[in-house]
Image (tube, rainbow, N blue to C red; front, side, top):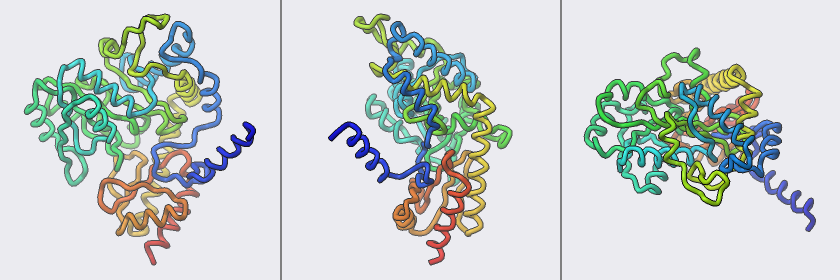
Length: 375
């Protein structure tokens, strides 16, 4: 087969999987990126962020991205781009384990599976604390658990945008309640990071979780959750001291060292992040996020009109709703190429409203669901 024939074969394979453009992907925390971002990726795909001597302009793009994103989180400009939230979370826990010499991670049960993975890889003891009926962590129980493991805590992990409901957990309340104990916090804002900082005017009650809180040392933010191609994440750090923990000797490299847990990191992720930031800017991201929230509100109201229970959310554009026989409903929706996701909450399904989820897609989905529930 010729290269063109093989490429056509790949195109057919891809067409058999769900399409973002067609509004079929309803539950995934990713979206169809603009074509110009893919072009940026291609321009820098063969450069290495871990070789800033040879590829100094690639490294410059990364630094500019880190500076912008860090400023968004009230930080001082430290961090690195990664291949996704899982790598960012793993790297954060590695850094904080080395920084604190602790062997225990404390987190609410709502913690993302990547934290559980990271604890297994790093041989950290994960202690999970319960949440209330409102799905919010019990801050007093968290504080009591921190005190119980005092001297052994590598970090406490809180989430800004939980997987099931998009809840921003009360990091500020934890710090004010348990501020006299020695511990540090990693915030997994993979989903919520590029949303919450732009919607304080819509919901001033969203908890503060960023570097304004002295105990927050690391923050994960994914750009590909909202706008860029996969993979594109950032791990933001409070200080240069933390960055030193992931700087390793590499005598074979021109600089003599490497930064990150990976050996090679394509400059493509820096190019896409940089172009996304430069093309949208603060106001562009704000308009995008506000539009997603409005669409999520519209979906919530349409579901409520059907008599479907919509579970609580902190304004983030995740809509979780409860139906009887949710797994059967999900299977029937999938048969119609409407790919909602399950959640860990019984009989609850989830739609993540990304840029590809238009009002037309929402109306079509609600119409199909209404027919299913009325039969």
